[in-house]
Each structure stands twice: as C-alpha cells, then as structure tokens.
Amino acid sequence: MVVGVLKLKLTIPENHSLKGKRGVLKSIQTRVANQFNVSVTECGDQELWQSSVLGFAAAGTSQPVVEATLNRVTDFVEALGLVQLGHAEVECFHCYDRVSI
Image 1 (cartoon, rainbow, N blue to C red):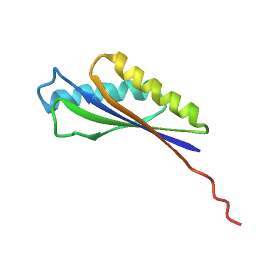
Image 2 (cartoon, helix red, strand yellow):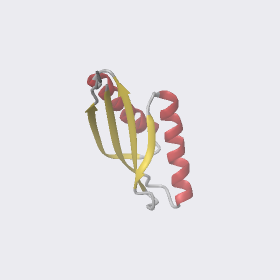
Image 3 (cartoon, helix red, strand yellow):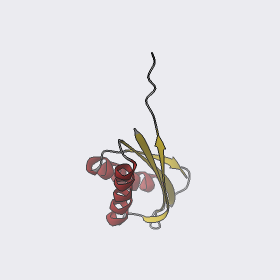
Image 4 (tube, rainbow, N blue to C red):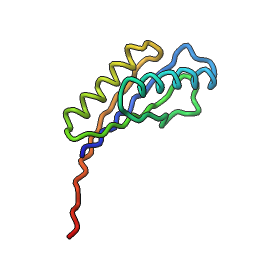
C-alpha cells in the first residue's frame, strides 16, 4: 500500500477575517472531498487571516496513481480561483504487509 501526502501553502489575499478564511477553506475542502477520494485538513497557519496550509492524503496500491491523484488535487484547487497557490509538496510512504506465522 502507498500513502501519499500533499501539503499546499495557500494565500487568500482578499480575506480580512478568520471567519472569511474558514468559509473559503470549507468551500475548498468540500469541493475536493466531493471530486476526489482524499482526506483533507488545515494543518498550518490557523491563526493567520490570509494564509493557510492544507494537507491532503490519499492511499492506493501504486505510487504513480497516488501521485497523479494528488497532482490533480493541486490543479483542481488552483482552478477554483479562490486562493493563490504557494509551495506544493508531495511525499509518498510505502507500507508493507507483515505476515505473522
């Protein structure tokens, strides 16, 4: 099994409150969850109004498939036009079954 993690640094330039930020992030989280089979959470910059870090996780049987899914998530978030994308980082972890005898 392969688990992939995507970390997206986002800027919300037109935002002026934490309430407004929550609305934008909730919209992104809902749309991504409906479009892709991934988990999503805010994992950084929670106290800043115009900045956020979102984390996405996907699991699968092949690293190329997991990476392609996370790259499509990045493209999808950018195409929404709600935020400006900063740094995007993808990392994959391989989990191997342990058989006990």
